[in-house]
Amino acid sequence: MFRLALENTLNLLIASGAIKLDRLEDSTIALHVPELGISLYFVCINARIHVLEAQQQNSDVDITLSKSAFVSLFKGKELKDLLANDEVVIRGNVKTAQSLSDLFTETSIDIEELVSHHTGDIIAHQLGKVAHFVKKGNNNDIVAVVETLKDDLSTLLVAPSRSRFFDRGEK
Amino acid sequence: MGKATHFGYQQVDVADKQGLVKGVFDSVAGSYDLMNDVLSFGAHRLWKRYAIGLSNVGKGDKVLDIAGGTGDLAIKFREKVGDTGQVILSDINGAMLEEGRKNLIDRGLVDVGFVQANAESLPFEDNTFDCVSIAFGLRNVTNKDAALRQMHRVLKKGGCLLVLEFSKVDNAVLEKFYDFYSFNVMPKLGRLIANDEDSYQYLAESIRKHPDQETLKQMALNAGFAFCEYHNLSGGIVALHKAVKA
Image (tube, rainbow over all chains, first blue to last red; front, side, top):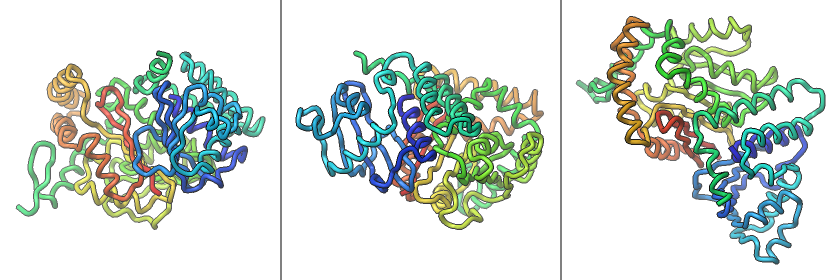
């Protein structure tokens, strides 16, 4: 669920022009947060981000970070500060890692809420926030957000394991 | 007999399989949606919605739905791509395509394209689509490797392939129930509702002959996709493979 919410949020923001993907074009970035049981692969191709969960062989950068550092990234903390405090390990191009970090900051995602337990409410909340990003009053964009919400909620019904890592993360 | 392949549990000539599959879908086309609802207890709608959710499709995108049958995925994709995008519904079977055309017209969707085509030789230029989907269709394709290569060819760089298909159940208890249901209940429901027991016996058998999750993932990578992952749905009864072209 987290991955779906993140992928949909990022792509809605890219499509609306709120964020740009230029610096990450043709990059694959692996991001691991062991405390949360999260391993995500951000595949950035052709002005689109695919967020995959299964291990991919050819990532350009491999970022491993603590839960608190992960949350800090979304709050705008500089990657270099986290590196200085040994809260993050980067294998590969640091500039690319910084670009992903910048992207997270620009999304203004409330990551603390996203990694909490109340999955359904979180998605509704996050997508509600995205709706504010896209042009206000544009019915098509709102419809897209509502449709995305429906898609995400179906995950809980047919693939509940997709949301279970929230529980693992809190252990 | 020339080169052999499977048609359910039967060994048949490669040249004959397409005609045999055509016979199945000619027979069930009229009751296809109803049977899907009955046999899956409505879950096929959730599986398809999950696939749409992972499609990464947005406004203005071009989508090809292969083996699109009665058009339920195409309808959802049309909502996603909006007026500036394009959806093409393709199926090798004319009867299924006709059902899809009726369903879409009933919903006022007159701008979806219809193409009767074999997935092994898609009549589209290279790098055309942002997303290609095939839901419950790859199982029936004779040369799956060739079909996957074609899907890769027609996708744009960064585009994704979604393969929604019955797969290998990942729970022993569920598998026993599922086997009983597939071979003892499904064909009888087929006879009762669609007046066609054999087609639903084929359905149960063809599911068991389809490559499992890991095998299909490797097939997608071998076809040229740079990334591939799969999601087990309903305990692996169905798996969604998502592959990305780089």
